[in-house]
Structure formats: structure tokens, C-alpha cells
Length: 225
Image (cartoon, rainbow, N blue to C red):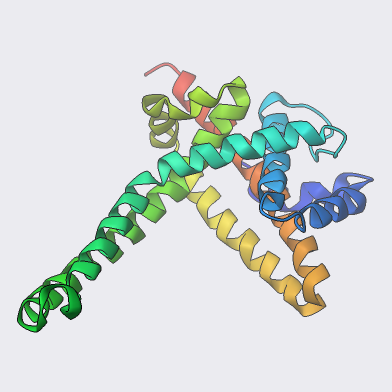
């Protein structure tokens, strides 16, 4: 996996400024703007996997980017269900521990338990968040590589990709964090700068996903020695 190339390939495209500017503008679309840009990034993932040129996708297939982004939202939502369910249960438990609901004495007893539960939930959130950071890139890539939404939910295959190339997917996680840090630097140039660097970050992340998937596929396909 060529880690540095994911950050440099963008500038090899003659139209990179235009493509990133359009992505920056798309970010401004209410509610679904970031999903459309995610769909665009996943088109980059698909091109890396298939070895297509140019790698940096344009915006002529706007509808395709929308569909991919919405599919990615569904995938992310399903993988995040344990976090959402646990968060809901934790919030419900906190409400039950309210003195106005159960009385002061019971609330005091439940309060200590609620604090312990909150700590456990926080630890789980951190661990599961890291898990999602490793697995979601493989799930997204599996989806765009096959063209099937259901492919992202073939959990055995997705987990197998990550297991076969743990180091690579850890690099993807590091690269994703680094890309978002770069995106944050755009605050220096106010809103426009943030949107532009965020578009660049998505292009980087899409490339990382594609590289990792190709590397993992090679590892899975390699015969045992």
C-alpha cells in the first residue's frame, strides 16, 4: 500500500481544482450534501479497486454519487446500531434515575449505578468506534467493488478482509484521522477553505479505502503456504 500516494495523487489530475471546488459547493446542500461527497469519494474507491483512470472522479455522474452516498448512509447506520441502541438504553436509564420519577432515595441509589453504567458505555463506545474505523472502510469498498448494497453486510467477508490485512486497515484509520486534521486546517481560510480541504480529505480517504481493499483481496486470495 502506497500511503503517501493517497495524499498526492489528487494534484496529478489536470482538473483537480475544479473537481474539489465542486465537491466543496456540494457540501453546502442541506442535509445530504456530505452524503453526496461521500458517494463521490467512494467512486474514487471503486476506480482505485478497478484500476480505472482518471482516479479522481468528476461530477458528470452526479446521480450516481447521490445513490452511493445514500447506500453508504444505510451501511454506516447498520454498523452503528449497537452504539445507537446502547446510547438509547443509557439515556433511558438516566431518565429513570430522575428523582422526580422514582423519588429521592431511589434516585440516589440508582445515580451511582447510572454513573457506573455511563463509564462502561463510554468505554464500549471508544472500543466500538475504533472497530468501526477499521471495518467500515472494508464494508464500503466491498459495496462499491461489487455494486451490491448487500455485499457490505456479508460480515464474514468484510471481517475477513480486515483480518487478512490488519496493518493496512490500521494505516487507513491513521490516514483518515490525518486527512480530517488537514481538513480542519481550512479554518484558516474561513468557511470556503474548510469546505475545500474537507473535499480534499474525502478524496484522500476514498483512495485509501480502495488501496486497502485491493491489498486485502490479494491477501485473502493468496494460497496458504
